[in-house]
Structures are given as C-alpha cells and as structure tokens.
Length: 93
Image (tube, rainbow, N blue to C red; front, side, top):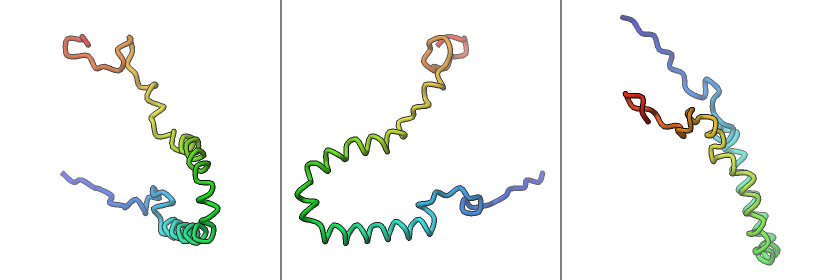
C-alpha cells in the first residue's frame, strides 16, 4: 500500500496573495512610512478636516469591504423552501 503525496508550499504553487509576498510586504512598509511623513507634515490640514474624513470613511469602507458578507450564499439553498435544511433519515426536515 504505497501512497504518494506531493508536499509543496503555497509559495511554490503560486497561491499567495500579493500582500503576503516579500514584495508586497516591502510595498506596504514603504506606504506606511510615506503615510507617517505625510501626516507629520500636514497634520493641521488633516485635523481641520477630521469630521469630513470620518464621514467619507463610511461609504469607502462600504464599497471596499462589502464583498465579505457572502453574497453567493443564496445560491446554495435547498429545494422545497427548506432554507437549506438537511432532511433526517426518514426524509423529513
């Protein structure tokens, strides 16, 4: 009984996201450093517009984060109005 398994990491398969790659981490760090120096030099402008920036954050978060609510879940419902409930051994919900 011989089993063969291929042990490859996600890096070898190419399944990693950009942000988890070494280049992505470097770009994120450079972005954080740039944001720090930008905010340090322009803090008076940011502080004066803080209420507007908070109001702007709501629709921006809605646009960029709305994909994580599982919008494809309605495609996986069971038939017969069961709402996806699994029947028991007798065939009753």
